Amino acid sequence: MTFFDVLVLAVVQGICEMLPVSSSAHVILAAKLMGFDPTTPEMTLLLVMLHTGTMLAVIIYFWNSWRDRYFSSASTFWPFARAVVVATVLTGIVGLGLMFFIEHAVLGGGHAEIEQLFGNVYIIAGGLAAAGIIIILSSRKAASVQAPVLSNAQSAWIGAVQGFCLPFRGFSRSGATISTGLLLGIDKVRSEEFSFALAVVLTPPVIAKEVYRFYKAYGSQALAGNMLHVAWPSVVGMLLSFVAALIALKWLSQWLEHGKWQLFGYYCLFASAMVLLTSHSLNWA
Image: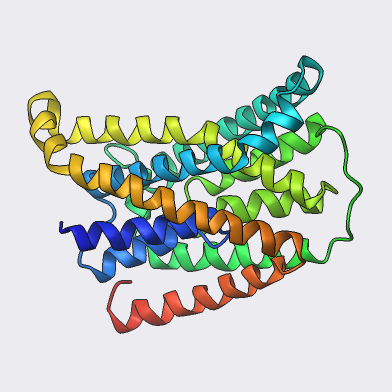
């Protein structure tokens, strides 16, 4: 893998991770165009390490807002922490349960892994279309009055939707969770902040899962040598995705706050159609 390959994947990841258009779908398609198999342990580890850069960008971008709104006192912190915990628990229940079902009932068990679906263009196209529809629907929701905290029910719904996104590349996590918040009557700013707070919590376990999958594929001795081989793409990719994510976050906030949220939905529908057209022309299906 060359520096240019890493640059392209990092920029695509950094921009698309922060926009509700499914970074995974765009990165997988970019990897396929460059001749890489996005389902291999090497690629899934590299791609998920790019999330570290975007996670750090999220923390830096939202830190002042989170500090003033949620970390200024115990009375503001604990309701926010409760909402994050409730949402994350539901994400684990729905996401892990769904992945277990797919691996054992759909893929046949044994050595089947959910990553086998990550290169399926029909799933990617379907996920993009579903994300586009929910974004468009949520954009028509009337403006809501800001509530001081999310209720347990609101947090649970957002967490459950996030869990449903985990196995399906193309079904944008940020697009689905922010849209769910809007449909539940949560104002735009809090929906956005809460969605990315959940991303910060979710990213470390996802990274750990891919490191373990890499370990299972190569064993302890081979792991050291292969880690050296992928170390430089990971470090460079993290830095590049970090910068791209900061730029994208600024763009997302402006579009979300100025009523252009629905345009992301139309783009997802367009991208879904393009994925299907591309899959046939390049024989990916």
